[in-house]
Length: 254
Image: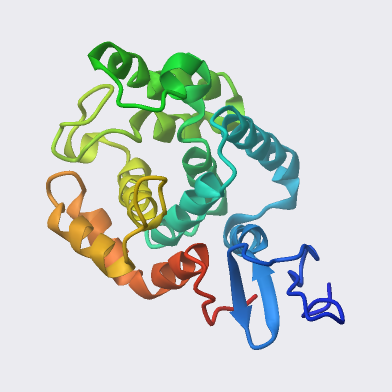
């Protein structure tokens, strides 16, 4: 275990990996600090870790990092939504094997974007109709990628359905209601939570309260009411985890 705080100059360091924190997102408890990456890794370890699956997990994490590099993404969006989805999934199962599938599916939800041309994926301005048709193929591409890997079969189903809407207005298959896998319905709520509370080049992230209000209002439309109910029930946990992401050191175990 690393020292709780940094060097003699008072620099904050993560007590787990030793990295200097500076302005990096972190959690704090007293004079102990933890970077967001280690915070999320520790959460996953407590929730669904299995040392026998270390090789599988390493493969899944590597795929997610490959997509982040392709999209020039330096944040922790994929890991964050994967861990936050687990918060909801634990309300429906305590099966560690199944929770790992949920984690991997959420972690790699956008892996199909690896197959989207740079001119579309990395375009700075709005996509035109033709470009949107191309972009909307990414769930099917992701499903084809993961569906060939035996230990990722259930995760692949989440990837295929992660852009569906409860009211049938999503894609690629226009599924509605319980035809959408439960884990994808839970993920949809979490993905919106992270998107709304994250900073973008063109806007600041909104508050947890604003995101919650929008999600609750969309129950029965964009979102499954059961998933929204689980979200509201886990508000305290999710609020603390979002606070870490937003650079507001939460009083959570580090």
